[in-house]
Amino acid sequence: MTDHATTPGPAAHQKIDTSVPHSARIWNYWLGGTDNYPVDREAGDAYTAVFPGIVTIARSSRAFLRRTITYLVSEAGIRQFLDVGTGLPTADNTHEVAQRIAPEARIVYVDNDPMVLAHARTLLHSTAEGATAYVDADVLDPERILAAAAETLDLTRPTALVLSNILGHVADHDRARSLVNRLMEALPSGSYLCVNDGSRGIDPVFEQAQDAYNESGAVPYNLRTVDEMTAYFDGLDLLDPGVVSVPLWRPEPASRTAEPIGEHGGLARKP
Image 1 (cartoon, helix red, strand yellow):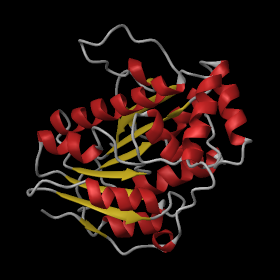
Image 2 (spheres, rainbow, N blue to C red):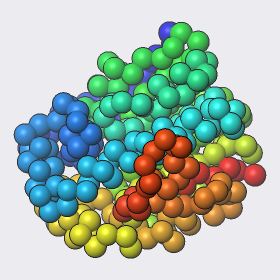
Image 3 (spheres, rainbow, N blue to C red):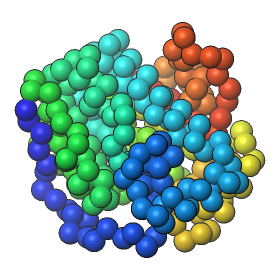
Image 4 (cartoon, rainbow, N blue to C red):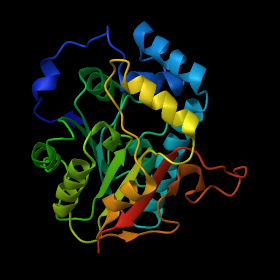
């Protein structure tokens, strides 16, 4: 087994702040996890009181991740994944989905939350044939991410960059696009970009709940329009059906008829 962590950054030495709600812990709570604190559950309950559909969004996001990773391994032949903004471990984490199909798959998880990294190192174990690594870095620092990822991944080989519900934490959309471009620039032809995030234009109640959350003192998360999200894929070859509400992205045959929700995503290949 080749689980390991790269050199820790500044966040590794930070104390976990349990006085302020944290998005990763609230997300964990909505997914039915236990890695959260009373302040997170209170914030999560306040949010669901206004918009109960957030639980569906959280679970649909995880299902989208599972389907895209399955496609990348089974049909695209990808064996390397750079998952930025990992969040707290739940079910069907990137390496679990990938290594069930291809035990030799190699995955680097990136987060800057000390609680996330501590849990990841404890719970996310690789197969003997593959590897997982955990990088303490911020999405705003692509150079550190790439340097640390190169300790585990061969970045001259096709790699899937996974950005699941992380770009909304970048306040300026142009900066978010720039970060995506820099990370993809470092990956070779045949690599993939997978993005999903909360979106505007589908559910006004969701948008009102998110705006209220952002004003509560918690770390803000910015919903983006579909056009803004589609711009992340500029210069790449978007796979059908494009950037769509995540339940509509290649739903599994046995699933019930999917309805659009305020979470969009897409998958694209670097030519």
